[in-house]
Image 1 (tube, rainbow, N blue to C red):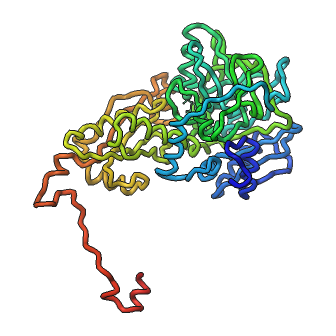
Image 2: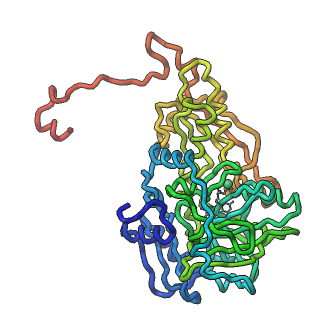
Image 3: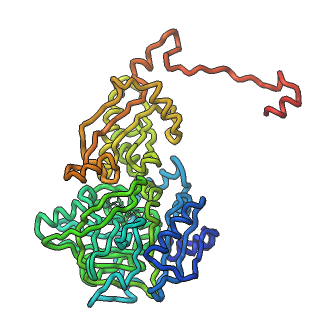
Length: 479
Ligand SMILES: Cc1cc2nc3c(=O)[nH]c(=O)nc-3n(C[C@H](O)[C@H](O)[C@H](O)COP(=O)(O)O)c2cc1C
Ligand SMILES: [Mn+2]
């Protein structure tokens, strides 16, 4: 990391990207609503894609906007000095998960450099951007801090927010997410539900915020562990919440009885489909605080899948290991499905392990907020990071009549259109779940067609030393 320390702040992360030659500064004036997302989407088509700093935002003196900080998974890993792929990368996130570092409340911080409480006109105060072409809602994409109304447990997630009036925004708190469960608890008691929207926070907080942790787990503790130092928090001005002291911008507010709903969408969702028109809960803004020369963070619409997986992959593996120990060898949420398809590698070594893989499948389905729809189980000789090997295992080791378990309809994620489409008809967001067991059944694994050979023994040849057979020229040509 060179001159950079552990626990990059948002501003340091931009400098870090610049030092690595992956920052594009745009000094020409850019209109924020359409201009920023369009330029960002265009630049994100490049591979590798840069971090973009808009230094001159029309209509917002002193404001900057950073986009696409998380558009590249290698970059995200570099923020923490982690390998970016596969088992090793996951082990680094897992180590952080298993060694959480609690946040520390401090007196004050840069986010308090400017405090606005009276007469808030959010649209004029903080630049917002378009979500999708032809959709005119104005969006922020904050890290959202809330507390459980009874237990006080903190939750941190990333939920988009859309401007509804001068001092009202929606927060897309879906009912299956932790924030939605907390809000349901507040509604049940009829109490106001304070919310803080933080924009421009340390990469560790973004990565932890969108990871699928257990309900009740404070994501700031995972962020601290990723950054190797506690997240410093300051008290909000108008609500009983604490927010990262170095936040560029904080919007404080309350979702309160009668718990109105706003209108937004469609949004380009993480599975590449354009989403729904939705009616998320309405937040009344009570204060805005920001740094001097604040830098807004903008996720490129439709460009978030990498960051969603970083902590979540580790959390799935932890969950499965907690359930079945070394029987579980590895797990992978396939990138194309973001987290709708989990592939789990298990190792049967005993006759009575048979059937445990199905239970592991159930455990995988219980990850997070109902997004895993399909689990494929494979043996330990399969490289789960290679789709063709998974395909081969399913084709050759799975008898669908016995080894595909079609489960009842259950809550899925609204962004998976085959489930989400139900919302259009006021029906539950459900779809059938499925476990595909492509592990060789124990009975067949041990049944020998002749001594030492089963139906699943791979064909193979002993290797020879080609030097004994080829002339020099051929040897060089085919080495
Ligand atoms: C840029 C970005 C925007 C997101 N927007 C939403 C959203 O509007 N609604 C939602 O339910 N999840 C959204 N997510 C995913 C959640 O942050 C993620 O599911 C997280 O785990 C939720 O927190 P929780 O696990 O504490 O419920 C978004 C993620 C990212 C990276
Ligand atoms: Mn949570």
